[in-house]
Amino acid sequence: MKNFIVLFLILGFSLVTAQAQKFQGQGPVEIVPTASKPIQKQWKGNYSFDDENLTFSNDFQGARLNGIIHDEDDTYTALITSENTPINSSPWYAFIVWSKEKKQINLILTYQESVKHRYYPKLSHDGINWMPLDSINYTEYDKGTKDFDPDSRPLKVKIKLEVGPDTLWVAGQELHTSKHVNNWINTQVQQSYIAQKSIGKSVEGRDLKLLTIGKETGKNMLIVISRQHPPEVTGYLAMKSFVETIGSDSKLAKRFRRKFTTYVVPLMNPDGVDNGHWRHNAGGIDLNRDWANFNQPETQAVRTFMENKIKETNGKFYFGIDFHSTWDDIYYTVDEKLEGNMPNLVPDWLKKIKETIDQYDPNISPSDKMEPTIISRNYFFVNYGAEALVFEIGDNTPRDFLIKKGEISANILMEMMLDRLD
Ligand SMILES: [Zn+2]
Image (cartoon, rainbow, N blue to C red):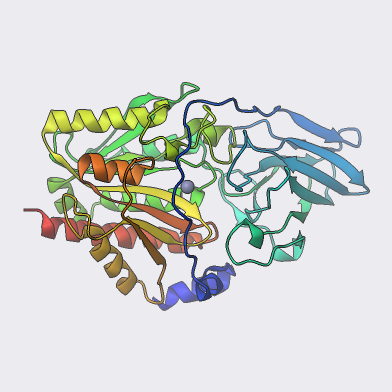
């Protein structure tokens, strides 16, 4: 376990300091209308300067760059805006940049009014492997004084970039668009016991992919979803590791798959992800407020799938998990006094995870207000009795650690569920 601590130091991320003052989580979820609203699509293309010596582009999936101007000398200012408002302050940006000759430029990242900078810049030369920008090339302006909410963040940041003929990718979080997710799904289905299918279409007609791990006819089921909110990449990466562990060839995973079938929707909001949205789907709605009204095709598809599975198998969903990202690792659980199909599974599981990972003590925030269901956790619990939670990973949680955490969490869960099955 010492390795984890060393890892924090090496990566220089803020998890350890953030835990000094623990993230308390967000307040109660508000009921909001979920009928579709207009969204602002972004103009796609190249922004060229200095007789095309320097070019920025947002002409790819997952990008968000809404305007850029040349200030003076080698300094440029970019504007990033959201798909609509009101919206949660999570400005996701991504663009590529290249120049005919190698040079250094300054780029100031700015956002629409009242929105603060959130995601630390990551760089890539292939759009697949990413490194955080060196902190000597990063300057914050008008930084707030609070610990966690948007008031803790700077209004704008200046980043120094080395540009040249090779394309440089710059993004708020690593790009895992529908193309990348589909590639991952294709690696998983190489296993004979993992299958994929589409359970419906998004607003813009993208397939909503479902992975089945184990027997299609199994009566004992789990539901795993991720990426309702497009920039929440750390939650997605933890989900991948969690799912790969359930689909691995360990003895435990084999035993688990004989008794349980795990259904996974890895990309709940493919339109939002591919359009670089900060929060909403192409219907302009926060999908994780639509689990009572079901106005959006993405939530409808999961509801129809789960209802049909219960009819087909006459079985039960024992567990439901929805992966997200926020300021710091936190679990939003169902209050212990409310019992589902496997009482106390989630509190016991989280306790064991904390015991297993040394020096790791994320907040647990239970709720007993389950109706109207509004969010996925409540829907899974109220409608199916699934022991359910929202599993939130910090934006800056070191990537190696969250992969380890996904793996440890899955192993402990499989053991516990096998022990508790009648
Ligand atoms: Zn979220």
